Amino acid sequence: MKRLSLMSNLLVLSLLIFVVPKLNAKDKHSNDDAEFSRILTGLKISPVRLNLKGKNLALVGLGSYIVNAQGACNDCHTNPPYAEGHDPFQGQPEKVNADNFLAGGVMFGPFISRNITPDADGLPAGLTFAQFRKTLRTGVDPDQLHPQISPLLQVMPWPVYGKMKDHDLRAIYEYLRSIPHAEPGAPAPTAARQAQ
Ligand code: HEC
Image 1 (tube, rainbow, N blue to C red):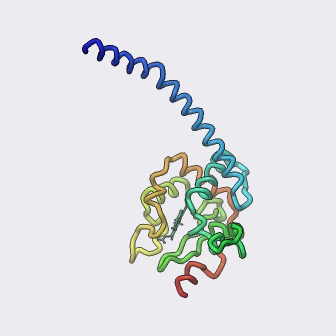
Image 2 (tube, protein in one colour):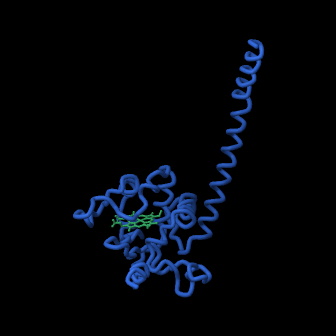
Image 3 (tube, rainbow, N blue to C red):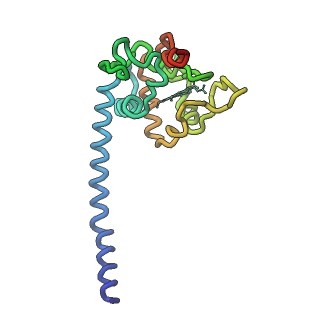
């Protein structure tokens, strides 16, 4: 019995020494592959033209993947979210509203989504990366637009986004830095639906 457990300990030890590092190496490799294919997909699916000057292309692509294939930022931050005749919820062929992309102006009761496109200084939502990261991690509204209700952003899923790795938050920020400045369109479809 003792002998057996010694054998099995040796077996586990040798697995740890010889096999696990190899598995890790393989994982690392496939992680790199997965990130690379996300970057390519991200660059392909961005609904707007990107200003890549002085930007990190890999971060922009990954950011576009997170924003456009995972984060659903468009659904809340673009008004209206889809181009006319291209609303997938009406069974139409999907096309995002590129003219007002991520410019905010969608109403959720008393809360209105913000413009997260770059301002005149090129800062998304007027925020530096440090401010942007803090906003997504803590939910504290950097503009304090409704202190009478709460100092925290409402509706906005910051409790979820705030769990992302710094690398992913930086990628989102780099993507938002590279999209064109835009203004919200009207009327707000969410508000219109609510009024009906
Ligand atoms: C479910 C709807 C919803 C989704 C999805 C959403 N947001 Fe928001 N976001 C909002 C609303 C609403 C506000 C304003 C909340 C308030 O006034 O309390 C906001 C505010 C923000 C702010 C604060 C901006 C400022 O100027 O202070 C940032 C930054 C932001 N969102 C980024 C994002 C990003 C990036 C994504 C996608 C990864 C995203 N949001 C997805 C609804 C949403």
